[in-house]
Amino acid sequence: MKEEKALKKLQVILRLETVERVKEALSAIGIGGATLMEVRGFGRQRGHTEIYRSQRMEVDFRSKMMLEIVMEEEKVDDAVKIILENARTGAVGDGKIFILPVENVIRIRTGESGREAL
Image (cartoon, rainbow, N blue to C red; front, side, top):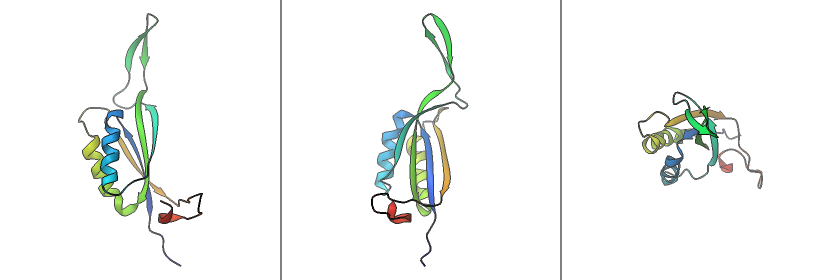
């Protein structure tokens, strides 16, 4: 029985304006599949104040984008380097990278699993 090598999932919280640059750079190193979602959250950046119908409102959650990518473990270091190079502005709110283990992945259409399903 062949041994499956580890898979990892990167959950990357990014500024909207850096997403395209990150996607293009990841594609250039052979990482082609990803899921992109619009998310809202807060961290050190906190929120801001807006005026709505003459009332001051504190908006705690900031709009960000979340990119999820499943990849072979040996590609993670290169992917993280690429993301840091292309998403870092140096300002508060640049985002975060979460690296998670993936037990398995299965392509629904063919039933392939593991690396073949990526």
